[in-house]
Image (tube, rainbow, N blue to C red):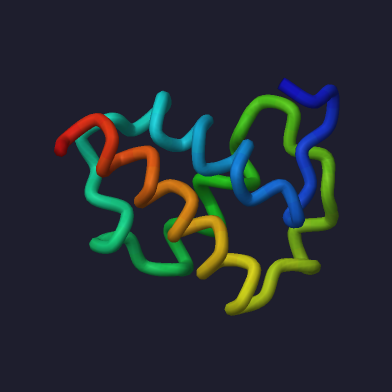
Length: 72
């Protein structure tokens, strides 16, 4: 795990979210909730205001890839 997590670390964030919320379907999560989940991750060290729709979407898709591996 990187020492600091930034908005651009979509894959790492996706892995961490998958571990923290294993039963949550990422595609059912609203971006407002996703933003909260990311900023509350241990190691998150970026400016919370630097998120945008494309970054959140990249994170959601990375999380979804991890989720698909767990749930087939």
